[in-house]
Length: 101
Image (cartoon, rainbow, N blue to C red; front, side, top):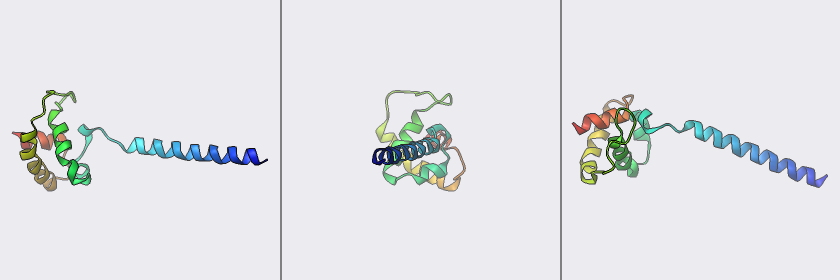
């Protein structure tokens, strides 16, 4: 009887963990579908990284260039943050492209 109880607890734990993992997986969106609101919700330390990835994406969601201009990202990031604060529902990657022009 004790074995069945332990097996039941393990099965229940695995079921709840897989449900949480599935729920977490469904919350994740590709970067090209982010809104500015979702961009602003990430940790401030990751803003430059997100802007860098957003800059690399083309309209076909392919990586445009394998070389990343780090100095350009440092100047581009504040512009993207400012634009996103003005239009929180706008597409994040589009804001990166507009700020780059």
